[in-house]
Amino acid sequence: MDRRFTERQNVQAGSLHVVIIVVLFVALMAALGTVFYQNFIAKKQVVVETNTSVDVKPLTTRVAFDSDIYSLDYPKDWNSETKKIESSTAGASVTTLTSHDGSVQASFTVSEKAPDTTCNVGDGLKVSSYHINGTSVANLADVPVYLVEAIVDSPGGGYNYTIGLTPDGGGTHAAIGDSHCNVKDVGTASTAIAGIYKLAKPTILATINFPKLQPKSSVAIKDMQQIKDVMTTDAYKAAVKILESAHKE
Image (spheres, rainbow, N blue to C red):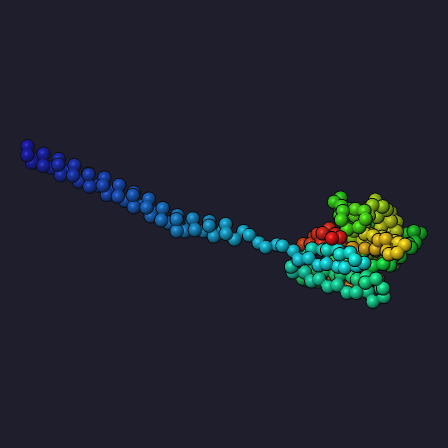
């Protein structure tokens, strides 16, 4: 009887040891899991969150003309250059802002000379593609201006393009199939008007050009899609923002 009782005690003691070992093993695994999470998974999450801020503040170029100052904002990796127009007696200038790869260029001209508005409606050249941005630029000229994009037939075949800020008028109400003369003045944000003692308002030309695609404006582009492809690039979108940032201080 004593031997059976002793054996029962030994079995119970052994079972208790097994339970204790299992409990300690589970506790150890839980502790190791917590350490692994804190030192590997949690740290990785913190690193990802700390790398989200990027400084995208643009630079600003300022253009002076006839006691007025005009400003344009542009990305840090673009180049800005302003050149005086030698023939001007009022301090006219041309400012060019060029993308880092040289594919897109925004041009801003302010002068006292009115642009040539002559155009041959009977030459048969038509508007082949047209789009107007409905957001106006309100603080540049004496009236709101809009960004217009037009692709037109070129004499002898191929295409030319004209992109720029334009006041409400024929250039902002054109359509595919219209005469190219309807969009000839696209990019002329303001036309010079003489005053009694000083210039009442200057000529302001604000355009976008593609130097690599068309080094010379007299050379036509064979495929319209080439123009449209450039207009989908980030550089082109940045050029649009540059023109839309233009304003008189």
